[in-house]
Every structure is written in C-alpha cells, then in structure tokens.
Length: 231
View (cartoon, rainbow, N blue to C red):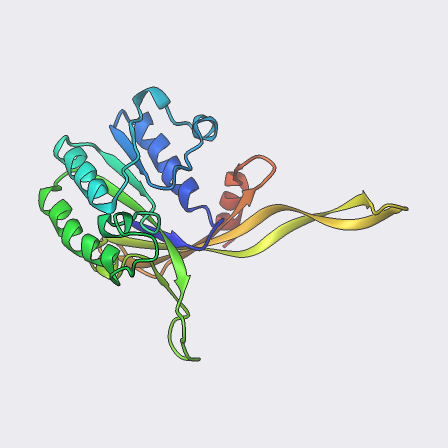
C-alpha cells in the first residue's frame, strides 16, 4: 500500500491507526522510521502498545529494504515505512560534499528492491508513506506533481491512497491587537479528502472526506458517520 500526499494530510496518522488496530488483533507490527519523527506519547494516545512495537531507523534505503525483507521472512503482519522521500540511497550518503549525485538513485534502489520484497511476501501488509513533489517545467497539461522514488511503487502497489487537504475549519475568537480586542479566526480542524487512486482488490477512484480535530488530535469519527449517513 502506498499512502502519499502533501504535508499535514494525515498520512502518518492513518498508518499509526492501522498499527494500533493490528495490535488489537494480536498481530505483529513494526515501523521503519527514516524521518525519525515517531512520537511515543502520540503513539500511545492513538492506541499503540510500545512494548510490542519494534522501530528500525536505517541509514540508507538499501538497509531499509534489507530490514523489511527480514521482517517479512519473520512473518510480521504489518510493516510501515516512513517515508520513501526520506530514504537516502547509499550512493548519496557516501558522496563527498559538493560531489554530483547520480540521478534517480532512489528510484533504482526501489525498482530492484520491491520485487525482492514481493517475491518473499506471502503474509505481510506493507504501508509505504510517500510525499508529493512539484514537477518542474510542467505545462498547463498533465499532472502538476509526482511522488518521490520513481515509478516502481505505482506499478507494484496493490493500493495507492492519495491524501489531500481540501479545507479548514475555523471558529471566531477575540484577540488583543495591542490596543483593543478584535475579531479573528482560529483554525481548529482540517478537512481531508482521501482518494483511492489505484486498487487491485476493489473499485478504484472512490473518495471519502473526514475532519481532523486539531484540538483533540484525532479524526472526528462521529461527524464522519453522520456525513456518511446523510449521503
């Protein structure tokens, strides 16, 4: 599964909630954390049991592929890779400062590594978090953005889920501007749209909308269910 989108679109939130749900079913889970961004306190709030949650922080993309392959062989049920964009190929890491990097090094690592993971995988669900990048020099036609790591994930993923922020929820507040109280708007939530861009197991191009409450740090589940009922 590839989960991709811009920043602050709940990609990691989705992955961590999947981890918590898998643990409740008694399944083995693991995190490959390239971004070094996992917050244990937030993880506990989302329902993750840290005592049964191995976290690997590889230095290179090649090490990440090897780690995931080893976890697949050990029959882990769910592995989250966070994120493809933050994974650095060994060639980049060992390059001297100012030395020209070979183009598409990460894409080559993934195009060779992912088939290897698929060949060994008969049991494990793998969630790859990815980020979008602007396409430089793009004309008025065609996509304006792409994902990191080349095209391999798009071809090999069974599901591709695109998260995007489509609006904000605000409330009126009063604030002091130095001389008097004035009206202002405080952002209290994000409206998120998730589009199933590719699916080998269901109908593609379906969408859902939900609200992330910044005050509680969680999705408004009740509001989502009410919205589905109205539709």
